[in-house]
Image (cartoon, rainbow, N blue to C red; front, side, top):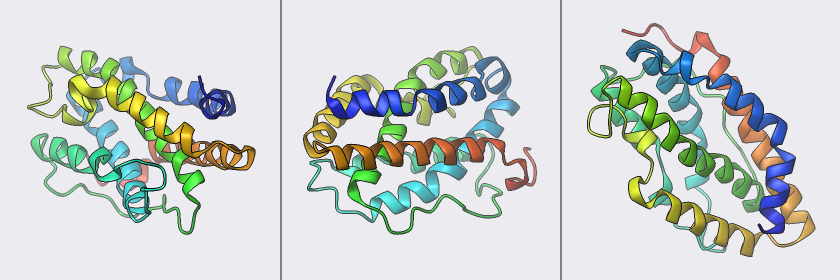
Length: 194
């Protein structure tokens, strides 16, 4: 494991455990309604963050960011599940001005979630949900998920190779984990789940 990913793992270990506890499959994926609520909260996190990350020039990192965006997948799942326009009141995740190093840390959280989605897909299958009927987001890159993770690791580690860059990336990952936790806790974002 590269120095970057060793630091990202150790620097976010506590937050990662908290998120795993928060995304309890027995609670969040036990019914279609629970899943809808979880997906709405996930969308509230992804939409503003991905918009900010997409505004950056990722070419120095060697990443084609557009092909890694997931917001449209979540929106398609929500549409299939009966939310043509998700009932959100506000966005509070915005990055504002940031460094590319910090953004690499944010993307670490998003790409890591894609790996976790492979596990969640198994719970969704028990609800009769798959990529074609509301489970597109958690299917991630499908059969290419492992390949995409390795490509991200390679590019990110080659780019963030100084102590300062690594520290910035860890801060970005911590920030993203905090924003995700906040989104999962904000019941007031949504009017109702039909």
